[in-house]
Amino acid sequence: MDITDEQLDEMEKNLTNIDFDIAEAEERRRRHDVMAHVHTFARCCPKASPIIHLGATSAFVGDNAVCYISSFFLPKITFFFKYRI
Image (cartoon, rainbow, N blue to C red; front, side, top):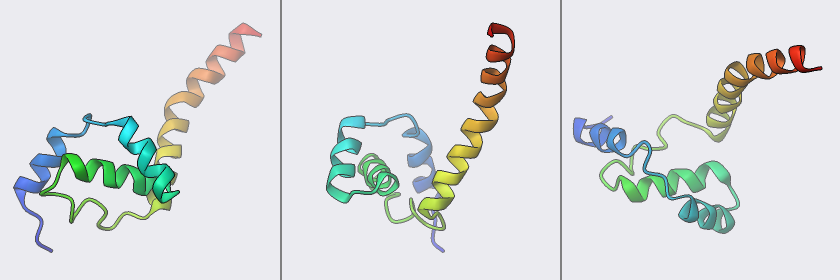
């Protein structure tokens, strides 16, 4: 695969450059939350747009997000309720 350092740098520089209004419009249009964000990110990274979705399925992205959120927040929520109830 042809993946350049320039493409990777472009994505890294735009990791937090998220236009949620565009993502919301893309989701309404595409009816697919992950692809909406892929296309929104591609607007910020035109050089990297051909490689943004390589090897990542929607399930991969969604499942990993759930795992991350669960591992990060679940212990905090458990701790909160353990001492608040």
